Length: 189
Image (tube, rainbow, N blue to C red; front, side, top):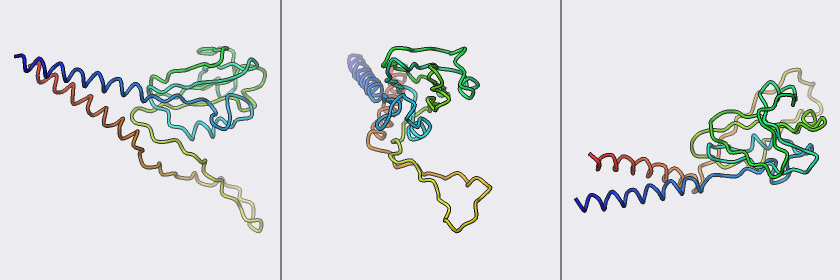
């Protein structure tokens, strides 16, 4: 009986360590960084598409007193309406935890900042993240002697990069966590 109790205690310790490692691997995404910020000059759409947002990560908005952060509905995001925000933040830095796998919409409610591009859509996914793209895909150019095209070019397919060692560690920790719970259940029978 003492041997089972010792094994159970050891396994619970491993599970606790695995859970702490999982929490420690959450990523803080500073909006617009590294080459911009929460301002009218940063291309928020390009920044957001170059990131992978995973449940457990955080958005960090850093901004001056002439800006704010409003979370809004999709309709209000599309129309840049700040009349009925879901939440409002006026103090920088503002940290938004990403806790579910949904799309969320943020705008600056001051002046006409939203219509000038100060808005960002963030889609959170479950599971291990892939490293963010370092360079946005290039836009194809039309040769000067080619006739102008009336159709939009097809979207480019970008293959995600191979998982980094940090992702492998995170997936391994998750596997250990699941295995630890399984062993604890078996031992408790």
